[in-house]
Amino acid sequence: MRLLFLAVLRPHTGNAVTAQRVRAHLEAAGHVCVLKDAFDFESPSEIANLILAENCEAALALHLYRGGRLLQGHRIPFGIIFGGTDVNEDANQEEKNTVMGRVLEEARFAVAFTESMKEMAQAQWPHAKGKIYVQSQGIATTPNAAFNWNTFLQRSEINQSADNLHIFLLICGLRQVKDPLYLVDAFSEWHQEEPSVYLVIAGPEVDPVFTREVKAKVRRAAGVRLIGEMPQEDLHAVVKNCFAVVNSSVSEGMSAAILEAMDLEVPVLARNIPGNAAVVKHEVTGLLFSNPQEFVHLAKRLLSEPALEKEIVVNGREYVRMYHSWQVERDTYQQLIRKLEGSTED
Image 1 (tube, rainbow, N blue to C red):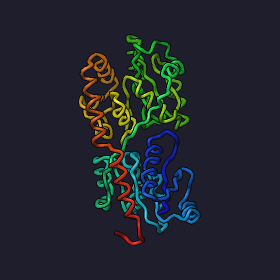
Image 2: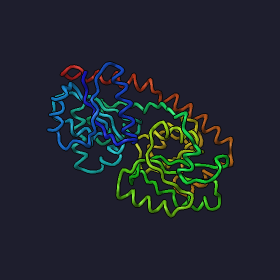
Image 3: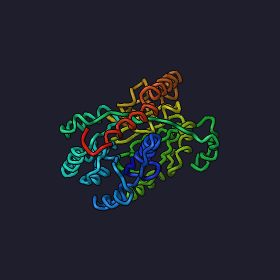
């Protein structure tokens, strides 16, 4: 089939990476996938023209509001993949909630990354009960073998020998929901008593106003660095070299950065929110913190207890292998897309 696939394609963001992976799954099954950025379109009529021009027989949208609302009323079958903020944030706004409910009525299927996301969606839109499937994100990491860690440290203005450094890496687009400043004060204080620890925040500048605030704050914070977005392979190499990966988001669908860290055998410290707690089991596959002070306490534990670090890494890797198989994800999407074949409902 020729499929239109709408997603938010801001480079190096979780949704963009997921979209590329799902497209690869569908193309491997022989479908043609026309991947477009939902932000490039204002109205369904622009999409109607695109469907005609590209001769699309069916469609898929990643993000129920941003992508899904554009697919309504075109009389071609479509499916939806929840993004995270659609269920966690947008559903709280009455107008958006109504629109998303209507989109789900028309969709042939919807995919949630976690059981809890599925339950939240069913509570919001009970009529969608029979059509929501759970498929966690499939993870495959590809660190750049030629990546130079020392050059990276110099570029990040960390002028210490790599041997006794402990880099904590926070991977996120600079926007409020990711809360990149949550740990900055506490971390900075810790760095002053323990100069070998650094917090490096890596990711694209998504919200320009908020980015200015982040830059101003980081500039004044000892032991905290901000680096821009980088290619996926380089980012995976940075993850592999750092001491731990950190997530301090206010809300998450399912953090690919956490799962990639587990796959690369790097410990994870994540804020205790539903999306993170769905993948990080405290002291088993990672560590969960509820405030900045608890983060510092747990980070110190990780530094002083090699046995704990080793156990978390082994369990994390095993968890990703077991529950986030790239091949299983491929099979699921290749099966689900068949629901879009034929013009009548299954």
